[in-house]
Length: 242
Image (cartoon, rainbow, N blue to C red; front, side, top):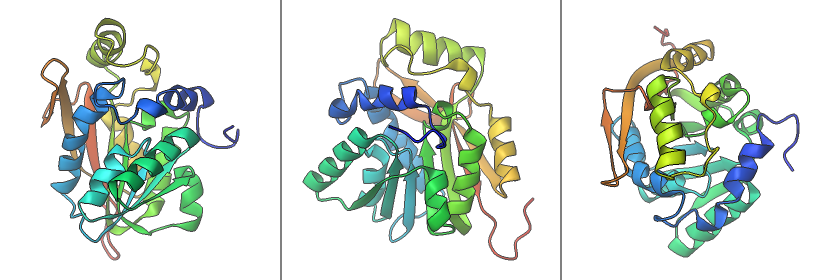
């Protein structure tokens, strides 16, 4: 059971827990994440080196991105609040000979003991599932070292996102279980950037993340009306945020 004081929605955690045993099945309900993962990794790597760096993946789920970063040579820690998902992640990493330190903690909890520890912090497809996403951004800012990079992906709160990510993906194409997303929790890039500024982060870049479910392909684009990624940076010591 999730502590009521933790920034998490028990219903959301239970929904993802239910898919734990099938998380690594590229043809299962997590198929879109499998298809998106190479592009998420590409977005991180085009701005931040991973080899030899300390990286943190918040909301790591079954470990798709955490393992991918570890295979690039990063020293990766993965955080999640779903016990079954973490067990799946640990077993998959063990079977694949990949070293990832998985922990049952929230970003806010981890920040109490690991402030400024990481060169790269990622939080993908999680913010739209928590009650207080601004608090998560504050924790990400605390966890990344001065001069380090934060990468976030989420869904924009637009009519197009509702049509494609909710109606289309969940009810028409059945790419995701119905109820996976709640439109009111989608986040506009301006809101995300504002939370970053409040936490001392500078917005470096925003990119759209387009997905073709029929061709099983994804790509970065300039259209951020549905899925998008944001790169934020914590200014280094002596730097003045702009």
